[in-house]
Every structure is written in C-alpha cells, then in structure tokens.
Image 1 (cartoon, rainbow, N blue to C red):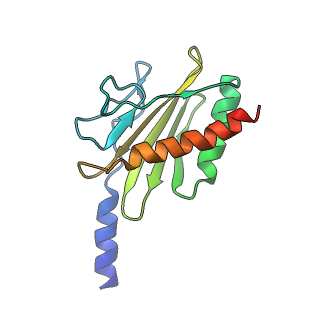
Image 2 (tube, rainbow, N blue to C red; image 1 turned 120 degrees about the horizontal axis):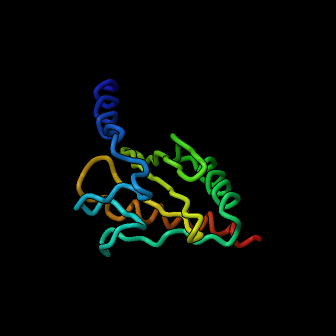
Length: 142
C-alpha cells in the first residue's frame, strides 16, 4: 500500500522541462493553459509584474537567491550572474520558477509554471507574490 502511494505521488512531480532558460534575452513563453505566469507575457491571464530593484542589480539578485534558499518549498537548480531556476514544491506537485535579471531596466523578470495539469488554482501567482513580498522586505531595508 505504501509503495503504491509513493508511486502515485512521484507521478505528480512530472518531468523537468527541457525548454526553460533564457533565449534571446527572454524567458520561455507561457503555454495557453492558466497554470503559468510570466512578467514577460503580453496577455493579462499570464502577466505578472516583474520585481523592481532599488539596490544595485548584483546585490539585489544575490538577495533574491538568499530569499529562495531559505524557503522550505524551494530547491535551487541553476544560478548564473543573471538567471536563477528553482523547483517549488507543494504537497503533491512540483512547479518550475525562473528569475532573469534585467540590469538595464533594473528589474527581475519572473516566470512560474506547473509541470502537470491545466489549472493551478492561482498557486503560481500567489507564491510569486509571496516571494516578491519577502524580497521587497529586504529591498526596503536599504
């Protein structure tokens, strides 16, 4: 019985998408399903505001990484000087989030999408707003 439950739960995680990352200075576009948000999306269903920066971009990006590393639902998978990729876990599912530093415009672009299913019932948007608030608290202390 326990082995069956573990097998079902493992199936909810889904495969890591291969199409993520930065292409021509942009994060991957959201699919048509409502389980994805992006600050680079043109349509309102998927659009979320990027994170504005008040600190110098490198310091702000390092602070975002620090916020993500202490979140119990987050696993950092990839970091570069302008890109972060993380897995965000809920009880049954894993979502993929990305952060892209735009030094010129003093922004961090964000994208978060569910690996499985059609709707996430707004979970990606709520979680990204929670991360924004945590990051904003650090930014405001300067």
